[in-house]
Amino acid sequence: MKIVIVLALLVIVVYTFGFAVTLWRGKQKMGSVAVFILTLSVVVLPFFSILKQ
Figure (cartoon, rainbow, N blue to C red):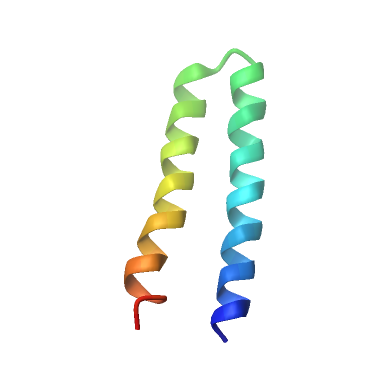
């Protein structure tokens, strides 16, 4: 089950990071930084709540 969770998180992180890069190239720096912070939270928070068990 943990493998499924990790794969789902990986897909979400890759997609969200790609969106942040797209925003950066579109000269929307603040939006890109906000989405990048969201990406970091998607990586960090499940590690402490789900995968730590």
